[in-house]
Length: 411
Image (cartoon, rainbow, N blue to C red):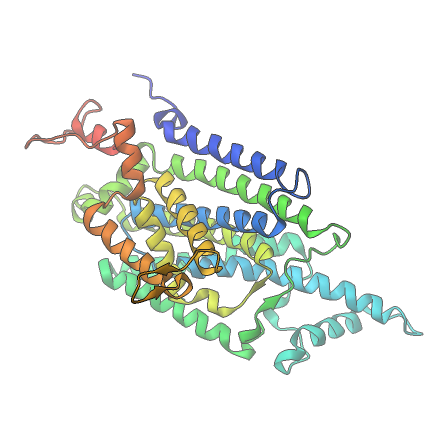
């Protein structure tokens, strides 16, 4: 029996890619840079950043929805990716400005003098004039792009190896991921961390070498890059959860002890998925923060990872397209409500200001989805498509391809 390619096993893959392509083309045509100008540049940036958050949600769903690990540290990898690309953006931009200033001096500056001037310009705000060791590769875009995945990947690999080999599970593992995130954030808040402390990295929206390109055009370029990254890594995630590997990680989620008893290297499977998800999340962060323009240690606080988990839960845990839907819907609603564009709700005795009450509404939505709709928004599409778990009626799942186990894996 010939097995269908993974991309044809689930119609949702092609649907997501098609919707993503149509959305990207539509925004481009309606943008100021390449179209009618109906959609303002600020909104194009919001759309681009939303696609980055959707990519982070896909990575979160790999870890939580399929592997069963509620990681409350995913946004740490997201922010690290932003910091890595932010180093080059800030260094190269500052270097170009300083070089023009020093070129006016009677004697041309040496490479060392230029580096010292750049360091003083970047770190003078925190009382330092030296370039920290962690900025050793900030002058090189290829090296910093490599560090975007290497640094978060190494952190996830070391953390995962220590946690998984100790067989830490459940809520204890979630607490550990949260503690890792908080410790990293507190370290970055220090001025001597090498990342400008609470000031963070700013001016990231100005791409070095492209000073003549306006923000309207850059916003569309980043939208294209974000859409491409989401499409590519969505395909990668769909491939990972398909086939035997996907069956094993779902089995680990459902009954880790039995999988270990059957002889599978559970810790190895966990480590691969956890590290891969960290690297995907870091790529999303590297695309997000140049659109946001600034990054600081507050982006790493555990509450951000909790928001990510809420998006995945509302969209539908264990469904990659559910993670995308949850991130897109909730993040866009958040921008609308917290941006003051939502009209106040007059209840007669009290006026609900959504800027203050949006988080309460979001928390209530999470509780309601958890209690009454555990499959989230994706469950609605499952019902419409007729994709439902089989009714076992006490029957064994079975091991062959025609048994109920195969049907349940697809549902």
